[in-house]
Length: 320
Image (cartoon, rainbow, N blue to C red; front, side, top):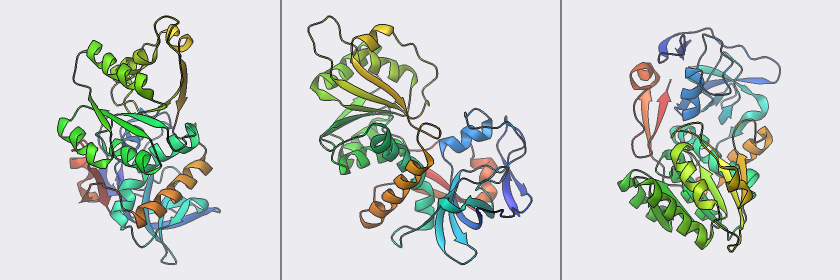
């Protein structure tokens, strides 16, 4: 079959031929129609993601949309190595094939599921969000962050604060439901002050797609100086680290605040929780579409487009 194939962790995948997958017990063969280029896909292909097994060669891709041999149209994932989803055919764990509602086309479903899952799982399973709480989103201008703003608002957030660098994208987020925006392009002291003002106003949950310097500024803002100010509970959910890793964290920040640090991703969230989140999101997205931009390209162009910058939250989706 034709596929994108990773032969080196230091180079983009090449479009070439690869062995056809053969389904084993508990697996289904999927004829792939669309697969999204998510940050986790790039991380695994470079060997930098914690889920990498270090073995070469392999087909990248963690999820996608396609048709089963009986013609059913499904979203699927959990493909057995070395068979990823950037190929004409892929394998799926039998339990990880979710029928797609008619209101979602293949390319949109393939592009939106992974970024939507990140905030849906983080809010519902990790933070135990309840309607009426307020949410701060670090990295709100990317594809996942823009969806996170919409998802938090639709699930009943009292207040959503969006932080990011792209000024045009930040302004657009107000139409998605953001009640306040914070530019990350300011001095460290000014950024801490901006975050502290929001925490003083009441932030219950932080969804962090960035880590690095923005996380350090946020954690400094959560820390309380002296003993006069109460320290309400803040659930800080770490999702991505596109702004850097590791960070510096003062022990006093933990002692002086109600901070709870949690991760959300494969390993910290169960597969059952992830499956439930995707199914719930598809049901909502089919009846009430989200504002989400995709760009489609033939899989044969994977090597050329692999390192292209994700523009204004637009997710690249490859068509085998």
